[in-house]
Amino acid sequence: MYAQVQEQSNVIINQLVKRIMKSGKVSRQEYSLLTSSLLVNAYINAELRTEIDCIFDFTQTGRLQLIDR
Image (cartoon, rainbow, N blue to C red; front, side, top):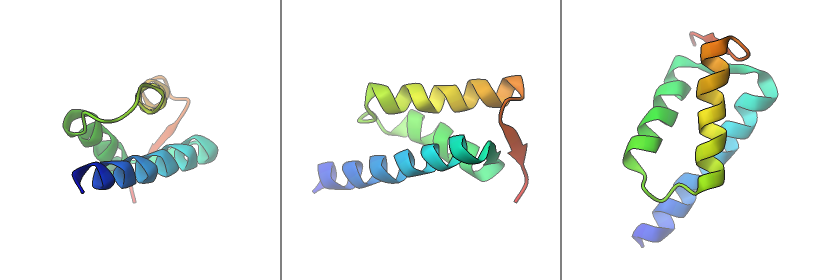
């Protein structure tokens, strides 16, 4: 059951990552969620970790817009 919850979590995070990359915008809440996901979820696969890292890098370099919602 725990593995099932982790898999669902990964799917949701993956969808969030795709939406952020497509829109070019990330909210502070989404940014915090991604940070927490990396810290808490040991089952995030390498590909998803890389995509999340790209979001962090793009936000820091200004290629993604950090917005308040």
